[in-house]
Image 1 (spheres, rainbow, N blue to C red):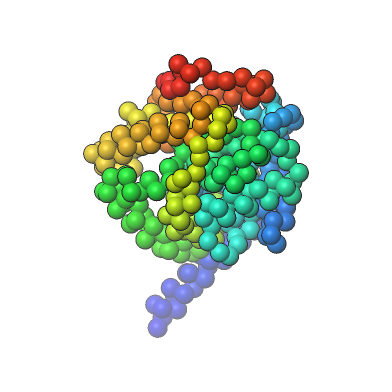
Image 2: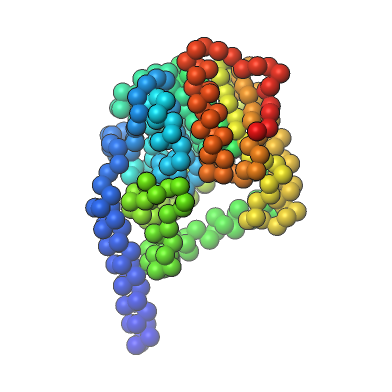
Length: 332
């Protein structure tokens, strides 16, 4: 009985510690950008800079607008740049229902309307957002001046990736409820994980600390992961999108992820590289750049290249120029 009571007291302390810490950091940070009503739920948009076309940034799975800390400030010197949080992430409210590609692209479209973002704009997406970009283009092509995929995911890619890797991903998904509980109980915060600010992200440190170790965001990750097959089925036949300018920035296939066994990482790299090349079929005006030395987070590993190439893409779109066909895939 005494042991059970002690456990309850420790859990209660951990829960209160994490909740009060979140409240403290949120009060210190304030709301970055603005919140807009989208279908009865608040959605967060953070815009900086001036000019057109606007660049809209969509983060990868589990990330929020702060993931663009090395990109948005630099690009904002050239044009207006807006990053946003999908439902349940960052400062955007969670919402009921399945968060599949069509739902997510619809919510972004409504957010662009609510914020009066000038059309057409350039839509940039990392990782899983690569699928959401395809959905957006399929439904709202007239909104777009161009698409930029940053190591973007491919619809139904799990059917092609190594089975050993898919098995690892399934196990990671199974562990998420446990990770959520540890987050709620303040375990990750006690380890100092919640206050960790990566190098180069110092300008966003207050917002990062205010948005770390929030258990409801695990629900948001689960929701998007569980909808991944539906998202793939919705977008597998999306495109081609005519001559819409599309830039594809891909990881270096010779850089193997340290998160997986070497043989699994090697097999995955070969298949991933092939799927990245296939993405060029989405438009007659597409270009692929392989970022040498980069892993999946190209905008962190090769920030210089990402900012340079998005800047060049911006100029190309402004001047109604086209890609050089003989440079449709290059390494930089």
